[in-house]
Length: 204
Image (cartoon, rainbow, N blue to C red):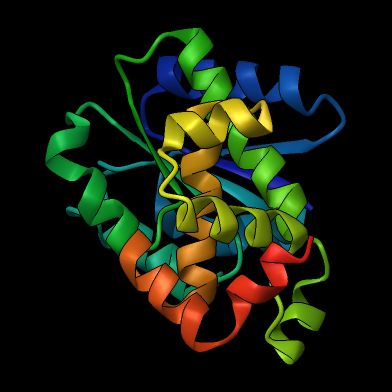
């Protein structure tokens, strides 16, 4: 398994790789300048377990890179980063399948927090996904989140309660929404009530 960092700007690519090496020193990190080199790189270096993807590559337009990666690797998390403000592109990227959006103006500490949160959330998501998909059950973390949403807790409240960052809360929520096939807290709660997920969360 490898982490793929796809960016045509060497300085930004180096910054991302440096953070990843601190977070996952044993992980194989593959650096690419273009998206069209991904297929051959995967054959050479193995399947991906995380993508760090620059939004604007020489061979992508808008969210096309996110869409292309998600079509081929639907279960692999994607961290998108861009010079565009989050207000402009974050929602479109999440809609296209990204798990998190990082502005290039973010500090090293912010970048580290976001990537650590994504890697932690990915580890949580490994609580057997296949079994969960077959049984319709949620992971322990997702069950906690549903209960907290039902209490009307904000991202900040959830972060404080679980002793994690708000970035990590966002990643967990995005994964929960995708797991349930919904796009908002309201839809998630509606789904949970209709499928008996709240009663199970209350018993924990």
